[in-house]
Image (spheres, rainbow, N blue to C red):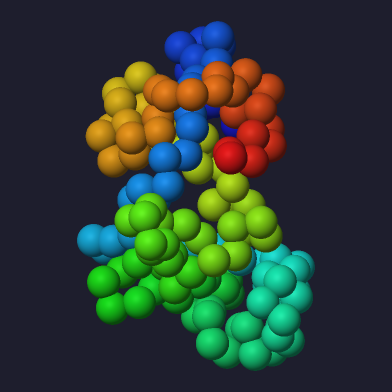
Length: 145
């Protein structure tokens, strides 16, 4: 975290983010990893009214020692769904993994203004809406809404 403290001054006044439900953070074009813990699996399974074992079998894959949600053929997260209005949303949104909740405040996106600008090119919610303060960003507790 030393690098973060050194470089955080550029966002000391906070960063704005508001989800636009575009689904770009959850979609391809390349395969990725959404890491999910055993506790997050249990909670998501309860949400879907299934067992943790069934959830693990149907929706996850092992990557080394870790577990990731699977993607469908187009590299979209298995839980990304489109509604009738054309918005895309997460089928397990209320209980989504912490990794998902903390987008776009990932270390790779906040290392510099340039990294943040790159995130904004992918995500229309970056630099829009509610401003998240320094503590929320660095603690990973913004639980972006």
